[in-house]
Structure formats: C-alpha cells, structure tokens
Image (cartoon, rainbow, N blue to C red):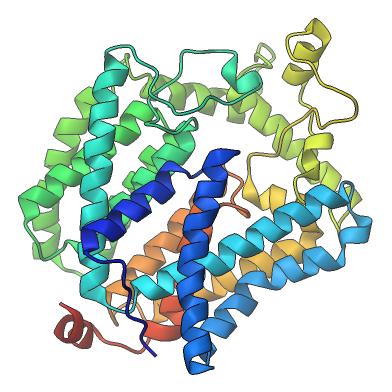
Length: 432
C-alpha cells in the first residue's frame, strides 16, 4: 500500500533531510535531534502498518537480512569485553537500520518525487557549503563542534563544512554526487556538470583521498563499460565531459590543497618498509591498527571482543607516547585506544568471523544479483555503483553503525527486492 506523505511541499521535505545531515555524526543535543527526525520517518511506516494491518514481505525480508548480524551479536553478548557498550552500539545499529528502511521505502514510492526532492536537497547542500567555504577561506572555523582527543591537537584542519569529520563530509558529498549523476541523466547537462564539479570541489577542499578515488571509480567503470559494450559513440561523448572535468580539477590539485602530497605520502608509508616512519603519521597508525586488529580477531574468532570494545585493545604507539607525556589523560578504566578505522576488521572485532560473514554475504549476494539485472532500470545501475562505493569506503571507515551506510544498504536491498523486475520504460512512464 502506498503511503501519502503529508509533509507539504517537496522543498520542506528537502529541508528536513538537510537538517538530518546537519545533525549527523554528533553526540549530545545534535544526536537527539537526529534521533527525533529518524523516529518521524519510522512513525509514518508504523502508521501505515497499523492502518492496513499488513507489512510488505519485501520490507520484512529487508529487516531480517540487515539485522541478522545484529541478532548474532546479541547472542554472543556474554562473551564480549564491555557488555554495556556492545548492546548500546547494536541497538543504535538496529534503530538506524529500521529507520533507514522506512525513510528509503517512503522515498522510493514515486521516482519523480524522489528526483525532485533530491534535486532540492542538492541545491540546499551546495548553497550552505558554498557560504561555509567562503568563511573557511577567510579564516573562520565553521564547524558546529570540534572532536575531543588527539584528533583536535592539530587545529590546522581541511574544510569539512559544518561537520567536524572531513571524511564524513566527503562521503556525504560523494553520495550526493552519485545520486545526482544518475537521476539527472535526461536533464540540463550544463547544470548537471556545474553541480557535479561543485561537489567534487568540496571533496578536494576536504583533502579526502577516499572521496577523490570514489569520484574516479564512477568515471572509470562507466568508461570501461562503454568500451566493453563497444559503444564507441557514447565513449566519445563522455570523453568530452571527462576532459572538461579534469581541466578544471587538476589545477585545484595544488600544493595548497595538499592532495597529491597526501596520496604519495600514504603510499610510501603504508606499502613501503621505512624505518624512519613517524608513529604519528596517519598511514603508519592505520597499518598498525589493521595488523593488531587481525591478531585480536584470531584470538577471538567466533565472538570478537564486542562492539566498540576494540578501543580498549587498540592503543597505538602514538597514543601511548601522548599518554606517557601527559598530553592526553584518562580517568579510571575508560577506553584509551581507538577503533580500527576499517569496517572489515571492525565488524570482525565486534562479532567475530561469523558476524563478518553475516554482514557482508548478503551485500555481496545482492551485488551479484543486481549485476545480472543491470539493464533493467536506472535504480539497479545506481545500486551497483552504491554497493561498490560502500565496499571501497569500508576499507578506511568503520560503518557498521553508521546511518549513511544503512541508507545505502536499505536502498540497494529494497531495489533488489522491490524494483528488480521493473523495466526502464515503466519507471519513466509512471513516475517521470
């Protein structure tokens, strides 16, 4: 049954989504605002269920697939290091999962509405961050809050909008980039190019390597796909767009933005055996975290140590040095380390290898299923890229309790279960 949203105009819905993004990634007051907004979307889905006393099979199956690893996590709670922390993060993950499903399901009921709302979200996002970027260039700190701990010792930080984490900021821009790229194929091409370039510029100013690679992936895959399908004319048309894109972006990769230097530095420190590595370097710390995470997982292969409990075990040499110097201080037995900064290792640290398989197997199964249906409709093609993006981002980000990743997983799963048998013509005729 279709549920009619009574939010009012599409612009108002877009404003609510922007408010959700503003409150994303914070604790305290912002988290509760974030919580209330998600609860509102969930309320509309529950209202629909109560009204018709019926819940769609695809929605029920989606809940089961996305929560099976959470159920396993709850079962192994007695064997975790910090049981309270473990249950807390699993419950937050479950809430994000079910509210994301509700939000995405409501949005996908009408493709035209989805497209129009998202175009307004993009406009608002660009307008807000363009103003913040100008203020940042003028020397103002535009972040709403600052992180507490070693991340805040060095105040010389790249641009991240109103968010304190530049990787989260970059990821949001990357997802908006992907969605706008796919939903605007038949709209004003000049406007689309300007918007995509603006979003890419935000990612450049954030100096996020993951964001830059994420943009490169979509163009590379599309280019290879067109060559593979022998669509030479299409390749020539796309080549012009790519050349314009590079002409504008390459000059921005200057010494001031520090992007090329960071990529070279990361490669040298992560992949080369350098005895002069600095323990404070990000790449050194990430390698240390991954190596020690695997060691801890192998010691607890079936249960891991519990959700977020890795912070009790992963105290890298740089943090140990700061503790010794008294630069950072802790009270009592609180966690002194950090998480592994990689979702593949972190999900195994939280729930062991069984939890790892229960989390990633449905994602990979959905990915290969959608590949077989890649010519059906634009939702499926977009979902394939989204899964690829999620699997790539997971290399350098812990995402198993992250809202944006649950929205991505909800989208691709609902597309696979609900829209996999709808062709492009029916979507265009009924919803455009």
